[in-house]
Length: 157
Image (tube, rainbow, N blue to C red; front, top):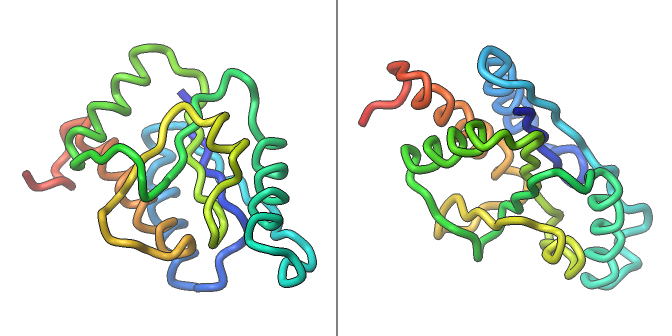
């Protein structure tokens, strides 16, 4: 199974970039992982929030294949604890999921079309995090999931 981590725009925080790099490098031992950055929308400040989500949505949809299993990181999504998330990932592996795509949207969320394309929404916390910071939090949780699957000591139950 391959995992794509798709984000809108590059992060402006060095600590987020460093955190993602740390965990994505560690994940190479467990799975094929590709980080895909959708370019920021040009002249975004001249657009309404809805127009911006629409333009970002078009770019996101342009990066997806019809057979991808798409998971939006969204505040209204399904919640897991770390162990149940690992079990879910493992189940996707057993089912033969080709590519699992996790998407972090822009500051205002996703367009209606992206929501319609999604197979699932995933909430990482009932707290709200910026679309920038959530990247490194998710990278760590993905790494944690694979160490749980492999029975490695990183996760302390």
